[in-house]
Image (cartoon, rainbow, N blue to C red; front, top):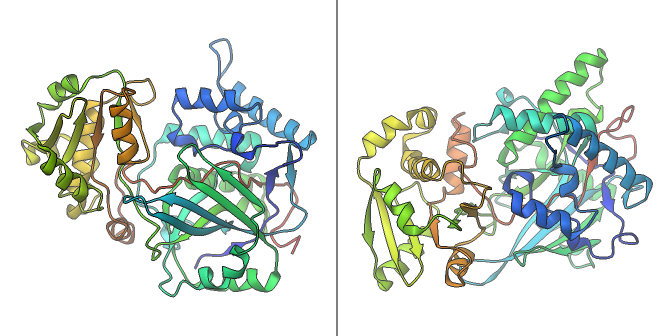
Length: 438
């Protein structure tokens, strides 16, 4: 099934970049214009300058892709970025705070995965993609010939074999350690032992993969592979463009969870949002006890039975339920046509909320934050007028959607923490074959 391989990754050189925390970033699709500016100003070498260039009105559409490619080449020449001498699988752990404040560790690793058509059933998507996003990522891939951000995939292994056999590696000092803006500790170790790599390959060889995050990147890599094959004519299948960098996590690990994506209102007030929402929702004020109970239920991923919750300043809280579920389903039927009926309500809630905030993502009206606690903190501290909570989908539901060969709208699911961009970059090198450096 899944065929994985070690690779010679490109990493930031600690001799040139003293604080690695300053040069990594979240995945491109969760970066709004404000965060992009913050990351760019944080360091002249922040990877956001490669994955999300800024074009001015005087420039043509391709200028930012050329600039990314030029910077990528320049940083390598300056040895700001250095390629590893040995092929490796990169063990990658993330320590983060759970819902109750307990410290959790999601274990995983980064390796190359051979690109497979979705029809084969070896790699299973669960979200739709947008043509304009795929076109943007394809342009970047054509110009830079590198994967700056790994696709996030899930596999099932109740026996947790990989976690067990890599336990001794995790007891050593990590090769790379960074802390992100949300207090998540990211730790990475290079595994170069051939026998250990072979064992990991054997474990994954019989397992299908579920794409958790990175549908646009995977689809882009398929298109790029087909382009290169057509240009080249004869190919062995081992060329580096036939593979993509991927982060693998065991879905049976309790610390691997799908989470909600709270939005905070930064210029739209809660009253204005509720006025807009009145077309679709009945809003019921909640007392403190009712709010605590609703929020506790909201924290547990479900098929969508939980309501949308709204948190305002001065202790104002509401529960929102659809006035006319059938009417809303008819209006958003294009988003529900390919989804199992068990997930319709969760998708419907998300579709309605996002339609009320249409055009607001990234322009300062509403922003996605990683946790309910952070959203509430933003409101209580005066950084936001209110927070909106939409139910998450359970991993089992996401798995059912993928196994049924169906897709729900893009960005319907979120896995926390995010896998950082820039920790390990996978170069697509002309003339190299997978296995050349084993």
